[in-house]
Image 1 (cartoon, rainbow, N blue to C red):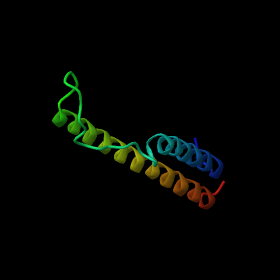
Image 2 (image 1 turned 30 degrees about the vertical axis):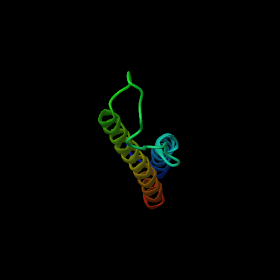
Image 3 (image 1 turned 90 degrees about the vertical axis):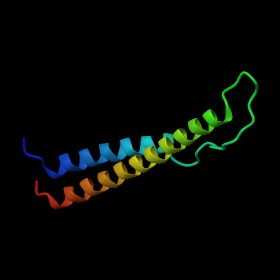
Image 4 (image 1 turned 180 degrees about the horizontal axis):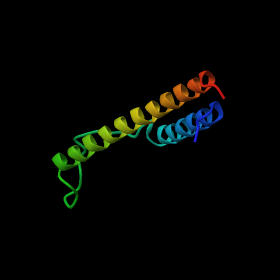
Length: 86
């Protein structure tokens, strides 16, 4: 199957769309990742809560960058669709 400009444009749009969905979920504004929160006696220890918050912060940061990368990749694929002859 030969990939034409239409195909490349559609693929680029799909990649950018998925990136937009990811960025919508994990992009700004992000939740509060405060550490050192006072918790009840039966709750997790502060150190455990800090580890959870740090892991959540890393996940949000990575996913936001991944979504932005997909949007950028989709843009470049769409730009290539103009160059690729039909």
